[in-house]
Image 1 (cartoon, helix red, strand yellow):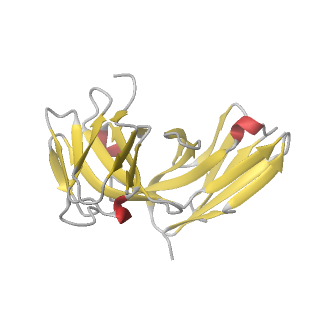
Image 2 (cartoon, rainbow over the protein chains, first blue to last red):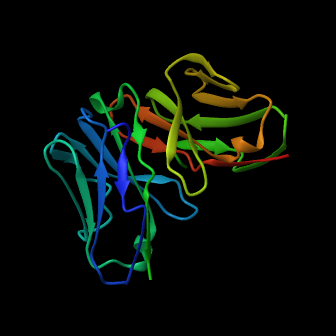
Amino acid sequence: GAGVSQSPSNKVTEKGKDVELRCDPISGHTALYWYRQSLGQGLEFLIYFQGNSAPDKSGLPSDRFSAERTGGSVSTLTIQRTQQEDSAVYLCASSLSQGAYGYTFGSGTRLTVV
Amino acid sequence: KNEVEQSPQNLTAQEGEFITINCSYSVGISALHWLQQHPGGGIVSLFMLSSGKKKHGRLIATINIQEKHSSLHITASHPRDSAVYICAVRTSSNYKLTFGKGTLLTVNP
């Protein structure tokens, strides 16, 4: 596609429910990143994919968070048993060659856990 | 101490003013990025710098590798420039970005 597409753009969920956030990167971008932006905080790294594998999951805050990427393209970030502290904007970015030529960001998914 | 520090945190200007946002970092980098985020919107990449200076329209970005410092300048600011401006670095041995906390710019008409 022309840009990085994320869906849904907004998600309100009840505490304890599972949510899935989707990222569709730019076609041909082998690297994909998930970041989180909490209210009043800077962006923090969650996970990095190269192709379908995730060599760096170091930013995932707990085992309730998982992500996968299929076909070297679409990625899904899953949060199980959501908590109020999970409320944030979740941003996806993709790049060629680990970012040497820059990154393209999606518009984000605003997650609100009530 | 954060690896990437931005100043100021908040900046209010009148339309037409010259604006400078600063970024200092403490690690070795392969590139520095300036990003723009409008309220409720996604992030747009403005510049990627590894040395020197780049210009795009009314925006100018400079970097001093020796001093580990970068500046983003906006000339003839306009209310549509109101946004959060974020500095981010890609370290020499890494692929991910480390972000500053952002500068909220408000340009009043």
